[in-house]
Length: 122
Image (cartoon, rainbow, N blue to C red; front, side, top):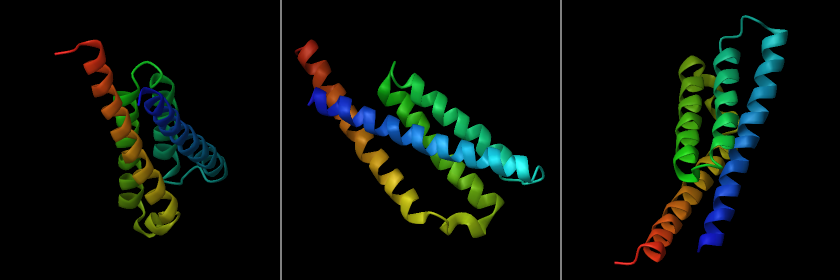
């Protein structure tokens, strides 16, 4: 179970790095080509934050990955609020990332509970 949690944390961390990295590169390119694009700067900032949270998740996987998940949801919501036509762009990938993230967070939390029970028996 603990090994499964490590794998889940690595998988969720990988999602943070992939989403953060791709959005960071794309937002940077858009910002360089069109400095007045309203979505590029917030996306660039949130993408950088996702990458940073991915690195901090090595210290405390559950909380930093949960925070990364919330930042990801906020980024999707902000993009929808600023440009509602873009919500359908990559909808399937967004659903896959969100559902996978939720499953991995649940596995990490369950293994932390099991690990605490092993270390501190009642």
